[in-house]
Length: 159
Length: 283
Image 1 (cartoon, each protein chain N blue to C red):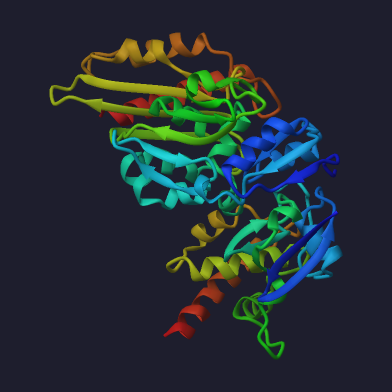
Image 2 (image 1 turned 120 degrees about the horizontal axis):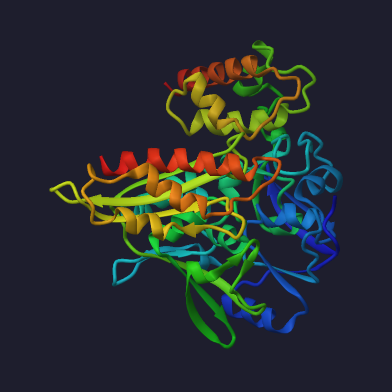
């Protein structure tokens, strides 16, 4: 067994793992942060997307031991100090951008990254940038609506 | 499915890593893991020991050497290949190639060294590396050697690297000629059904001064299309019979035949793609 120490959402965590455990299972089953989901387990669907040093990665394609000392952010890190929803979460709720909600945490972590690291995106650009995330309810129109809305909110907030 | 059990090592220096490669049983190197993790899960590989290069800072550098060649550390991510100013300036075709790989999440984690060493016959980098005439620097306790990319990729999932060697650096000669890199896949993140990389330079009199073309998604790995190059090089762009030259070259190739496309379909698509790419480059 290996002890992995890392930071998630600004808080330090430590846990024991077998070397072959996936990061997503370490986050969910060892550290008990259940917001990150696992979908396909093959790196296609993006449900397990988290941020590593601020950049989105798929946590089912990484071993927990590789994240020794890493600085991660999961969907639990989006909400404000008193549990208020982040702008991405607000937009997903307002635009009805989830149906079953299984893929949502992955989409939220992508949205959080995309709206901060791009100029105003067109719908086409949003679709292109989100092609590593699947919504099996196929609610993509509303997801694109929500990303656009969240980016507008983010730009307004920055002014 | 979970990977089989293995011992895990996370060396902090290259020296430590090379020592492990020599001493431990059945070592397998893991870089970003974006090709290897799926292969471990499929149990295509069942290594006894996994050597993680993630904690070695010197493998993450991009430099320009005295000869004007790029020296790209094996652990440089696809994201960095796209963003890096030195790469964009000295080998823009490489940055364009990296943009086609996987999706944002994969590009943030996957590395140039890992991708090349995986030697997947449909991967994105190899055709580009072939036209750039890149080389791979391999290091072991026994010493250092530099291998041309065409000699490095031996076949599908097979490279020239010995079991105790680590690919540490990719040497890419400067290339600012006109270029085009194109990949066709059913979904964007998929491996290529057909892929082409090409660079060209035309003289002021309309003759084709330089032309290098490589194709991917072939049975035995990527290939430089030398017969096509020599059929066109030195000719005036208006006097070449593009269709005939392309057909002769492509008919001699053996594309992969699988669920993503049969051989005939891939040959047809490759001909179309080559005609478009070459026309665009020499016009």
